Image (cartoon, rainbow, N blue to C red):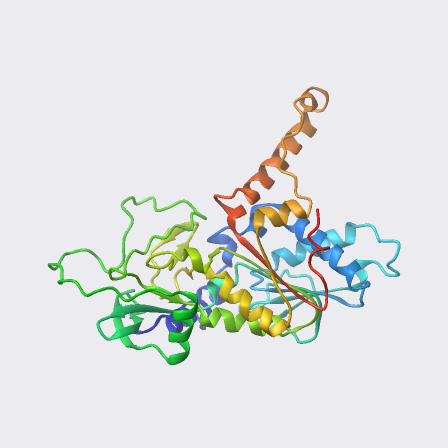
Length: 378
């Protein structure tokens, strides 16, 4: 098969007719997001929903649109919480009766999805409420660029093997993105190294692979001076999503980086069956790369016409009432079962807020016609 740009290879591998997210059993079988890690995450998102509902004056309907919904896990859990929550005195109608839930996902609708959750391939227009995208942007296909003696060029990839070769020069649009958001000097040419037998794609030394959610920079395949992941396609995708809001908040939760600390040689990797694997875009594994969060945020702010808020997941969850504190030891004596439950809940929150793990993820909140500060106040 001929080598093609990574953006097109990734799109076919993830979203084509036999793509990883279209024909498989779902993301939860291969990697854990915060949604899958603990109900504490959903509880925090529901607190955000409740605060936003009040800030918008308890609209009918109140939309929750989940982009990259997997099999609808977040929306199912939010629906359950809404049905079990008390109605604020100022609300004439309970949120559960006003909630309009929409899952956005290219895969076929799950057979067991409740009928009150809509299923579509594109976000609807005119959203009033919350649009959320949990680890969606890292799966938006993007190009990879490499420096050469004649300037920056696209890295091409053979979808069946993962073998890469330099391709044509970057378009002016992608070159502008690179110089603006990922300034990387082209290295001085050095004498060619002797041929080696090293594989094109770095393999793991252990057959066990890496632990799930490590999110390590494992590729190490670029020339000296660095391959770069061109995030313009993610900016455009986020801009389109924000543009679907009439009033409310767009929330992206993802692992990423900022201009001051871009990773060297990129972050492109794969996941399969809970293990990190080489990113071969043949449809057999998830293909993901960290998100240039500041670039994405700038595009959303331009579309919305107002400033964004960017915080760590740890900051966001603590602001939304997540409590990772250990229960008092005295509880173990008076209520052993309650102590065990409280300890398990605290451990789950600790995982979600660990700065070295899920707690290091970014929360990007883009408001449209509403203030974020009050929503995220402790």
